Every structure is written in structure tokens, then in C-alpha cells.
Image (tube, rainbow, N blue to C red; front, side, top):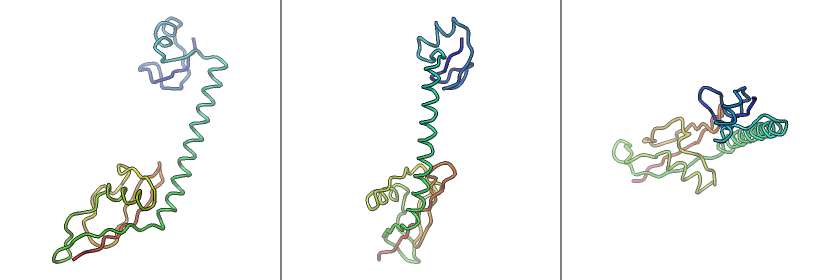
Length: 149
């Protein structure tokens, strides 16, 4: 019997894959546990529609990421930190502070776990922070840290 898997099944196949299994295994195990549905014209039509929707959603996400890269090029985040002698900065700027400032000032939501440069900024001046917005789409956030006496 041919079935379409609704989730990954060890030793059988991956989600959305059409596989051939024995009638008993399909009707007694896979179908009752909602791990698979029988392959019919209607189920194949639904599967093709879901794959098309997923492809369109992925394409839209990629296009949004490319647009966000262009938006980030024109933004410079300004931070003020206290400094000591020899231009030493007290504290540092974390990725969370950067994402919070992007959200509050520009209404741009970026997950801080997507930062490629994971370290904190602990120097005065301009720093470019790289962020992976989508697969193979890297954005750069310009950060300027000024000093307060």
C-alpha cells in the first residue's frame, strides 16, 4: 500500500514522502497514529498544494530578508557608554541591546541568536555587526558607541 507520511518515521521515510509499506503496517500502525494517510488523488492534490505553499512562503521570506538588508544599510544605531582613562569603556553593548534598540526606534525585529558576530561590543567608535537574516542572506547593522565623561 502506498502512503504519504505526515511526519518522519524511523526506518520508513521522511515527512511528505510517498512510500510503499505493507497493508497491515499501514492500516494497523501508521494510519491510526496519524503518521500517514493513504495515497489517493485527493491526498496527492493536498500534498502538492502544501509543497507549493511552502515554496512560496520560503520565497517571500527570502525576499523580505533581501529588503531588510537594504533597510539596514541606511541605519546607524547610536549608543552612549561611560569611559575611563585611555578610552576604556565601562561595560559593553550586547546583541540583546542592539535588537531592543532596532525594535524601539525602527520597528525591526531581528532574533539575537541570528547574530554571526556573537560577542559584545566593548570599544568606542563604529562597529559593523553581521546578522544572518535568511540562508545565504547576511545583513550588516552599523553601531556607533560614543563616550560620556
